Image 1 (tube, one colour):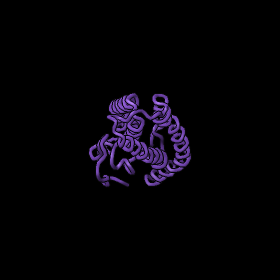
Image 2: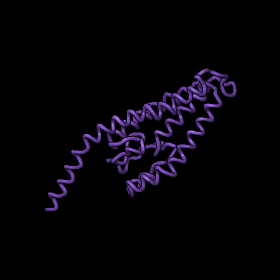
Image 3: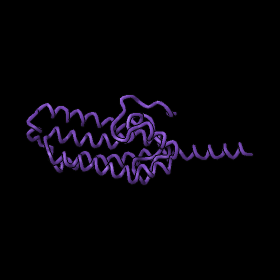
Image 4: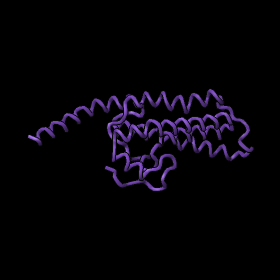
Length: 187
């Protein structure tokens, strides 16, 4: 009797995953276009019009470093969003959170790869265009992400995933990536 009830719960959970996964993929795509599209693309463009000003400290190679930050941040952002939809079966949006804790991919190096990537991409634009206003915007975005993570996201994750999340936090830094990937606990 117990085995049958357990089997029914497992079948019910996995039959719902197909529809939830489709919703997660669509929701993630929309959220990607709206959130990072607005924060990383539209706002820095509004601020700078993507015009090149004199590089910071008149040091031209800093533009190359800025371009590297922009280019390096994009695959991190794309992979992390994709992982939320396909593995976590949810979205980065708080209104449709993941069903499963995501601890693979870039999450093996840093707890918040999306926020790190977004901030890096904005910082990269500031360096690339030599625009101190975009630099200030990058600082504002990092502070907003920090406050959101500490005040809302981490407490919510602790309630949702309990000991699994605590273990993840004990091994993965919040902002500065590890040099080697965390393998323990990966399913």
